[in-house]
Length: 358
Length: 260
Image: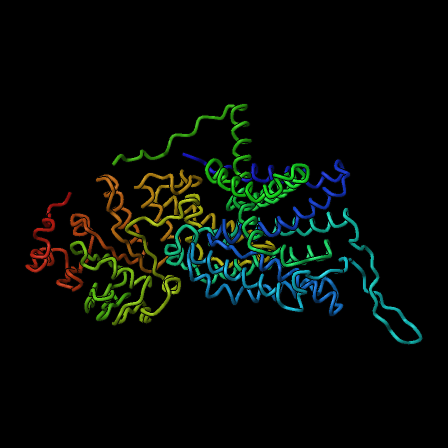
């Protein structure tokens, strides 16, 4: 019988993969890859959220790009057209997105399986069309010129008897390296928060309702409420990711937030591993790197230009067939097996009670 | 003794099918009461209504003098009703221990915020949940399997785990749906022992079963259902001699009076 691997193996792989990614800028001096790694951080945030919803609670969303778009557009509109503080805009984006997710989630999460997937797909489509045709969102060309995020201190200055409150910018996130650390700081906090949520009463309730909604309800779990809560949480993550994108890339347009992107998020969840918080990291990293690599090939070999879309499909199929528990669990169990072979394990204690044969 | 559960003129109609018709009975506090009947008699339908899986078409269900017939499943559970399922409904991908820890849901509070930040006595609560769950596993003799995947357990153990999970919720009333089906003779006698232990812990037991030996051997009272209607109620001895009960079971399966 399979024993669940210890928490230490999980932590080891998590810390290891994080360390590799965070140390990469010291070895890779290519600005382009620094940029790509910032995207990996942003996608990690999205994938962790979607994984809480899909992998843990078992609710498939095919419209997650919509929540990502809401964060990005709220930040973009509020900072460029209303000149609000970037942080405040980000916060408003999260609240707005969470509110909309709540309104969408309450009726949608009564649906199960394919129906929920269809409903979220429809929702994603609606948001995409709105972005294309609403004048505030700038149509196909989108919005450009969002400011950088910055950390400052409030300064109280006394000028001729009048007190003025001003902000001093201590640190402006204005270059690729700073974007890298900014996005990864967010990703790390969200990974830790999510790992905490998952290994708690709430996480167990989510996995329980995934296993059997009926049994979960008979143990006093309010299934509908938990489903809506995790949906709202994952939408809030997506919104934060969107705001980060807006403030690091400084240009957004509807094409970034279409159905294809929702699907590639699902692929990242599956590749990293369903119901694995740290798998989100590996899923986002491996798929983003792969797509970038295919793009470089596509530039030199024009006949392979659209190959990344096909590759997505092929990878999804291969992972489902050969690695259904995803990259993270496969690597972790591989490590565990390696260790077991080297150090002889004591024989397992015989079961205390004889198992009755039927 | 007072009535813990009172079922009053309960009916359930699915489309044109009358699954349960005008059934009334009471379960006294501290009793072991059984519900028996041939296949398709409406036993599980009745159990589903009591546990709030779906509402009755008409009639009332009072638990602890409180009407519960319109409550959602999780609200019924909050009142102190726990159950098991005919086709074991475990959380297969979770460990044996985690399954029982979910059973402690009603006796712990941590929400999303506490979980995310690990604030507000979160760690202490998690440890308490794990400890309480372990105690329940000990009670059913599954402590050695705590870290196994629930789906990997042999069937007999899965049934025990489901009972441990239900007991973790500290119910006042435990509903057992065909808890003996699929068990070996030895496992059945273990189950009987366990049901007596549960009663000794002052938990009222209401069980639905096919197994006449088991039901007659342990129940204080028996309700017999046939074609959705109650045809008899009383002590096992009275029920076994009831002509309508014998008629209902003839051709179905013979009533075996001997104890196995």
